[in-house]
Length: 116
Length: 113
Image 1 (cartoon, chains in turn blue, brown):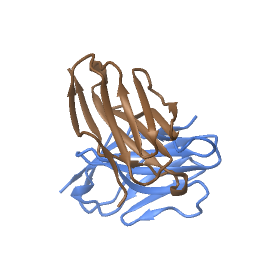
Image 2 (tube, chains in turn cyan, blue; image 1 turned 120 degrees about the horizontal axis):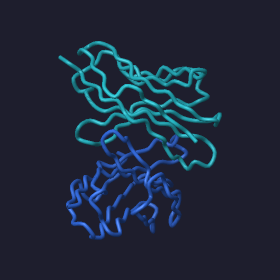
Image 3 (cartoon, chains in turn cyan, brown; image 1 turned 90 degrees about the vertical axis):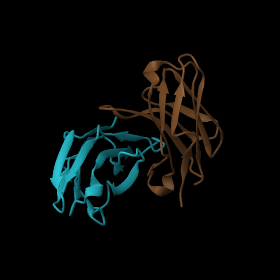
Image 4 (spheres, one colour; image 1 turned 135 degrees about the horizontal axis):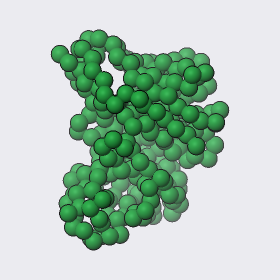
């Protein structure tokens, strides 16, 4: 079974500063993928970034980067130059290989608040 | 532009009513999912389907059933709605050729009174 742990219920950051949202995972499957989603107050889930377990380099998408430390089983999201529009709930999720049919296991989420 | 749509954004039903939540995707995805989201509990998987007429229970299937008669449509059914099923319901779809990234619908906020 897979497990995702997000230990920060809430985080605060000043506008234009960088922030790291923590995510640790647990799986016995050697092939897996890690996702980060953003959920604004409107409720839609927005895909941010993906990291495959065999990817050699950390994934980056614009201001988002994923700090992937395989030995530590961590997949932290780094948001650089925070903007007011980054205020939202953030979910870390994992898919394992095999016959999981793409089921994602989600963490509990972290609420990020960006202050002006 | 990829799209997952859900039949309603807001729904109010009475206890004991049969409730249908519809989800349609236009990406030819094999996999479709229904989640419920409650404060402090994250997203919990109710049911998923990996092919037409195929379905599997998720983590919290009690009180729910699903139907997938066509590839693009996945319905969630509350046979007899109860107040503890008041929640946000999210539908998603994915495919293996897309790293299983899940594309979500806008959600349905269901209130059972």
